[in-house]
Image 1 (cartoon, rainbow, N blue to C red):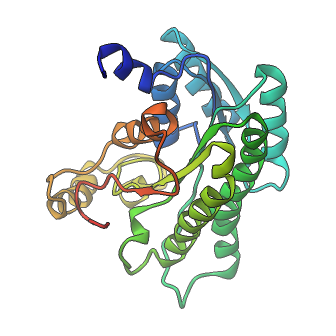
Image 2: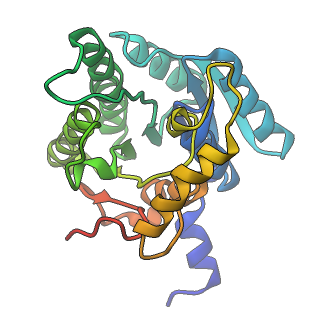
Length: 270
């Protein structure tokens, strides 16, 4: 029989260790906060060591368990080294969230090769490296959950974001194939494909060179995005983070190889 205790336990991460990349801001930061709120010890990793430390400090200030680490996910071997340190310190890794990402605006025909190499290195290779490092540990310990960050951009083509969408489509395929390979070890691999969420990444549309937000431009960007959604709003970072929590926790113990897209209904798939 399911009851309040079993429901609580299904989402409880007490005693588990989670590593979140891109934890310095946006979806990564909120995900780290949510996983810590569910009881996990969270390693907040980001290329910006200061922002990662801020996230960890905020969690600690709320009574959670967290520490920070500097990590450039695009560097070969960096994720493996960090995972090794985490396992040595905490004797295991139970949740890996590959959230770090970057964005460029470009058509396919005009994309700069160097810029494309950069987003492939972060958005696709970075996820690959994180999956490899965590997957080896989790297979050996016979259990774990890997959550990768794709994008709703893979569900329907849109002009101007093709290079970015290519990398995120690669993440979706990586997720499915890895789920097949490591399922026998009780390791689950899923991905989340968020719709439009105001973050530092999307703020480029309404932020000036000095970092100041143009509120009028922001409203002009967000209003049509909200109108496109059946729910008539844009997303919040918490909308995505709670989806990650579901995939990280035992509540989703029979779910692997899936793409879940919290997008307000803008794109529907099955």
